Image (cartoon, rainbow over all chains, first blue to last red; front, side, top):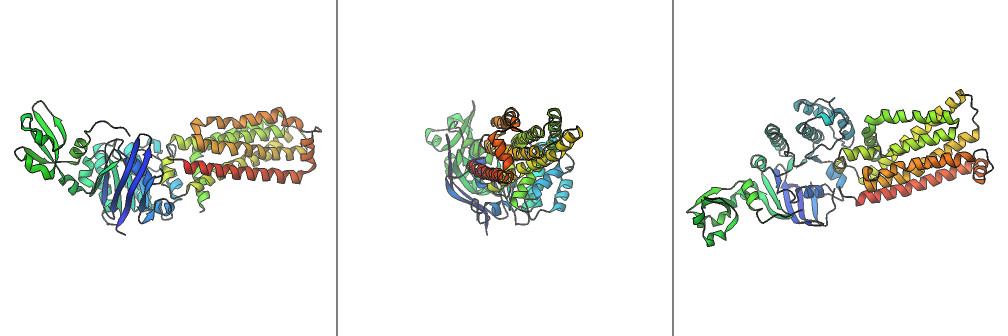
Length: 286
Length: 216
């Protein structure tokens, strides 16, 4: 099985928001960043993958298993890390392990203890007393203790300090090292993806904008900078997004158009640039 | 381990931090039984209080946002519901056994003579009332959540008041309900148990439907 996650033509409608025909696949042994601005449908996509929301159309396969008809088998191989704690606040770390471990046949108690030591989490500490970063590490420790093959993280880095974010990215890189695990990582902090992700799926207000290799994604666009008078009407039509200053402008263009702008400053675009400039079409709500 | 048992264990783990409170509340009905010198009142009150705690797992999971945990566990929604009913019935059974053992002992120590008919009626009424409360409470909590469905927590209070005001007065009278219950104990027990089983079946079906429709 080459793909650990396959999403095909996924659609879901809510009043005022539609997720439309989302398709992507995550190969085994890689990290995919699921990006998009707030309210673009990242969490909705993850909830649909986990069958927490009912899809209107489409198909989702987790390690070749349908996420609805084979839900239990599929979920036994999936670990999930949310942006906030999902355990009972009053539990101690040890109680959280007792409560959750019974659901997994291959739960490794020793591995859990090792991970707690590594993450400096005391088993006697209450979940509510752990910092946000520690709560996230507890969720990771749980997922690693039953050797989840696919790890899904929903905005795990929002609210984390740079040290914790760096640590998380290291953990994820180690996790996929053996080529037997994959990560789907939703975030709007795209700087994290520059470092960790191999693939990018970009959802823009419910529509799939791009899904593929990160390098391919970044190569598709360029940033062009120049004076205000250097921007002719002809060139303006080629801009995807523009930021104007009193002295000049900065804009996103397609790489194929760069020759038209060669008299100006043309630089590689970052993921952040692409997300920001492609979202200048006006405010839309989910 | 069976999935229903796993789900029930998860619910017991949820209320573990509140176990002391629940145990403490079981002491109150002993006092009520002693003050009223009535086993039926004591047992009914115990079942009323324990039914009021049926919302605890809903409350704790709602407070901690645990729907997201339920969403990732490899267990079906149906088994999560079965587990919660098993948890609720288990707490009810424990409270029932405790009050059926401790209350008569306390009343006896106070010099009360308890008629077998009263023990029998207290037991039948306790089981029936607990069933009546919880078969409505659980689907209510599933449908509205604990915070919005808090009114379901007070169903047992209404039931207990009804017991005090009407049913406890039946004991020792020639009321046809009382007479038929006492006159045919085995048939009455079977009938009550059958009604309870059917009520739980319908309640479980309703809860599963609600949970399956629900999006987290």
